[in-house]
Length: 525
Image 1 (cartoon, one colour):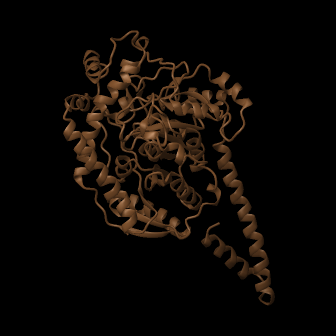
Image 2 (image 1 turned 90 degrees about the vertical axis):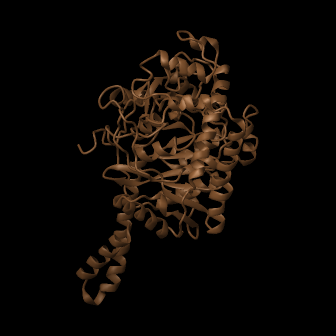
Image 3 (image 1 turned 45 degrees about the horizontal axis):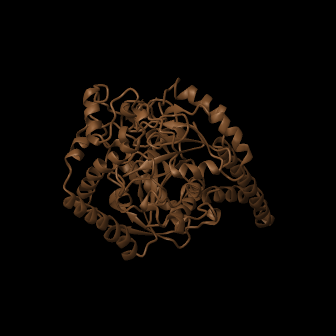
């Protein structure tokens, strides 16, 4: 109960008590009323927890049928696993917190189920590779049930600079369940929208720069981008080995921590994960006792933008953090322009090499009705031959990447962008200001979907720092602006994943601003 409510109850009781015994009566009755209100609040929290409780495969399938394939047509799920019911039955023999939990997987991540991995492109519509990404083995061992694949921004939003987040040639346009005419952000658009709309217990997304955290923020859920190298990227359609990672998208920080515990670990085929086993732990252990008392948080004021309603919402989040015992330290920081410039050079160069390596690993049978594609140039040629691929936007980023062959320039760009975001960025900001984490709004409220001119959001958030550095970044819902959700970001240093999750959990408990439920309508209706 809030302090204001407690004060109101006390005032009423004192006013109605007899003068002679007012003090005794008020003390007794305040305790009684506070206990009642506390019980009511506990019941409310219980109902909220039950609303997000795991459901059966059948129940989730009915939900998908009702609101994804019919009704408002969120268009978040791109394929369903025909063997999900069998997997659910087998999961009954497993014990543990993830046993029987039903999840969805972004469709640039391979699973051994009878579903293709398309990255949203018609080029890979027959990509039944029959392989599990190594981190999927940990989830399966924990009893997780894969229900299906989620739609995404095609090729993880790296085909064009004019794209519409959540659109792919295979899956069409994903819609935000909070406002059907508003963007779900990307590229893990379907994962964010599906979990917000209750189509699974959790989902897996992937991020190169913002592709987990932005859709989590705009859809009003939790998203966690772990330290790059905490989870294997083998059998994930790539953009950049320097920045790519997968991560959980859930309705609570604890659920994200449970997922991460099963997903984390070293993989001999992915050199970036060499240290993962040394840093893997039970990420959910101790979360219930986590506290912000005495924790210094660096507030990135220039990441807030100029919208008065965004500023006001962020102010309420800061008030909640302060009430929970955190010490807030304002930080005046503007990311250098060369950091983003050099990041783009890195992404272009690595897209050409990394995508070719992936395509060369795909079985020939996966190109049953299409010409075999083994290079980025093959993908570019395929798109030119298929007008439906280029109906709404082109492939300028693909073409730039194909022309990016200057290895010396690439190495210099990677060294500089990594330094600016890491050692001279997050690490320096933490050290110089003696803070444990950096906080900021994650992303702006959802903008209108526009297939003609593409995304046009306002500049809010500073998640590129964590993306380029490869450091952990957690977003937790902090409320909404005009019914459009926004998240609060917590960013830490490399391998600080557990402490970031602890801070996010503590804020989640302290938050006083309500998080909206999806309207399943157009904005303003």
